Length: 383
Image (cartoon, rainbow, N blue to C red; front, side, top):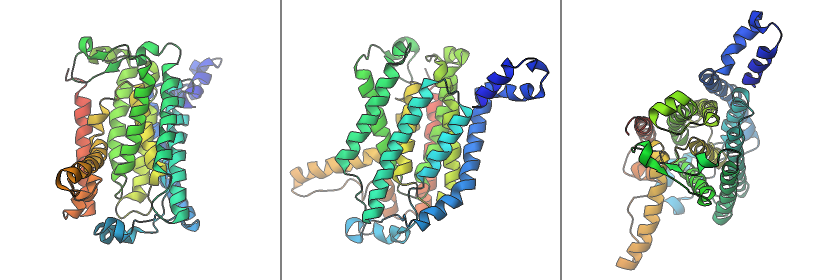
């Protein structure tokens, strides 16, 4: 919308003499609109936060907590959180979408794909949260149904990107970090491309969802990941920077920088209410939407492989669950009884049960996430 104001003022007769034209001239720059998106999303989250929390409380949308029989000692640490308002992810989604529409160019097809994935997975998370609250347990949407919907959203987004006019060559190869351009392109992915994009979207949405288990953990890690991908999008959209850094240039990807910064601002504003001790939880509504948004942005700037580094905390959380389940099955066959690799997964609970305070786990994971984001950015030159 801001960019449209700039276009209208530029086209107006005698625009060079108009003060309004001089003011709106800054709207053409991605850097200005990205900062504006961050500030606007943050301010909107802060202004609406208390109202959203009061509304959730009035609707009796409280977080169900797993019983002592399900989680044993962890219930002693988290039992007091029962009844805390959940589904606060609607605040993040609302601020993100509003900031994106205000500060991004509407003629950018990448914008609509990213927002479509965000809203689609956010709706799935909303349904999951609603069922948990209404049934007063932690089951929610059936796991198989949830996975099917995630795949449908992922495949639809992947196919939409792959079919965009003039974008087939851009999306038909995979960029790998640490290797120079002449060697790092896996070319001719062909019909596998939409499936690969779906894998990234499904994997990232589930990884962020698993990370959302402590006050402010997922939101704080999202801030560092969002900042890193704002840089990736900007340099991808800047012809000179892309050429210098040996990455593929695409102007549409550059216009996603305001979306990334909108996500950063929305999560910072949400942290105002979600930091320890939390007054509200984002729930699956927020975590699945965030994961989908990050994955879609990473795909659009062709840095999806770097999610392993930049989003290492999310990856570690998901990997800990997969390793725990796999070792349970293997050890049952080897020793006749299941054994654990970790005291509990996702891995943030492992550290809690080892004696770390919740606030220690959160801040240390934030620090780790920030360092991983910086390492990911460093790969732009480590080639």
